[in-house]
Length: 189
Length: 352
Image (tube, rainbow over all chains, first blue to last red; front, side, top):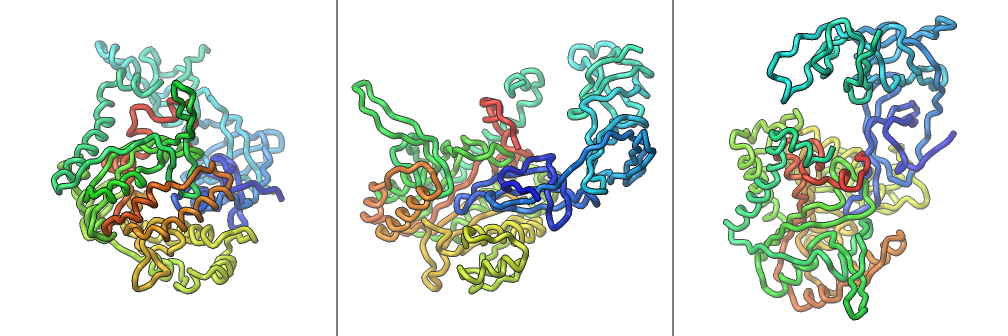
């Protein structure tokens, strides 16, 4: 069992809270005018997705969750879960959507991802920093709007909308930054 | 891209940064109208305040002839203002820059921040509660004349700001929301045991104060937040109130309150301790505590003790984070959004 000081917990890491692995979504280090420094941690149960908040003493030892990584492919998602498959063994696993935050809109079938495991449970997914998606809907840019709005809103095959240059057409493939949701480039076929 | 450049590119962004100007004007007008003097005290001092948990920005003052003195940026203007109270200034307020080092740059913290302090003479902490309710309501309605105080929205959540705000004593709140009675709460032996049975990690080094705070943050505050109203938490255990007057009927507690809204601490108020020997003793304890924790050490403010010995009227005072008032008034999620030059941009830091 490895532990870290609560003061060193970082966003995106996994810790054990009330016996279960949790994904850290936010940390806030505070020095109240009176009182020793504290670390407020917001987290999600990595199996159920349930959100919790706990305030640690900053020097308190907190158990770190052991996390193993496996390359898997995204298959499909429904309203509550995303399903991934091991391309060699065809083993499938589902991950609660809440653990993907808002990243589901970047995933199409067969997208390579890294699934995070704690023992035999899938507790999270790492999505590549950028992905290539097809533009499903792009309206002609309105002439005269070029100076103030050199970008327009386009809809991608997954349903999300991004801001793209006005030359982007329906059917184009575009590279998108999965951290910011920004358009990166048009991909030539 | 830095904020000035973003504003240049999108001029409609400017309006949100002007909320600060509106809030500061409202604060100033509020106190001027009720006859408070606005004072201006030094930011660069030789003896900063001695809170045991805060770290100070230290520098040097050097003269042309080679004299070199330790100098510090204030963490609060309180010590200077108290000297003015001894001088007889009466009701007064100050809006000034304060600095705290070794903190995380976060949603609620910028190392350089703006503090509002006001002091009311011949008054106690309940008078400051009234001032605060009135001032805050005015800030909200001046910033947005259409704001509805009974259904005021911050970050998509509705809050009821109509006075009077909720008030809970620390002892009541512990009893109600953490099921810990007053004797247990105050006991250095019993509190760790109860905390242990609740599942908190308690070691030999865990202090009573650390346990008290952890229960406050994990059980009491989340329960109070659910009311979606602002609230005053008052009468803190005396060891947690180094500058406040003990309650005359129950000296285990001191006349201190903190005021919260939307999970954000907005101000910390004391009925000021005016007893010089007792204050000197508490300062010495705090300075010892600073040493123990490896914080920078500096001398005790002798002039303040002298001022208290000369006598100050019965006074209540409060310190309020102005940047947080602006966050709330302008519906901003972070302090950085209220600043033209947030520290994270100036120093290229990652905000947590």
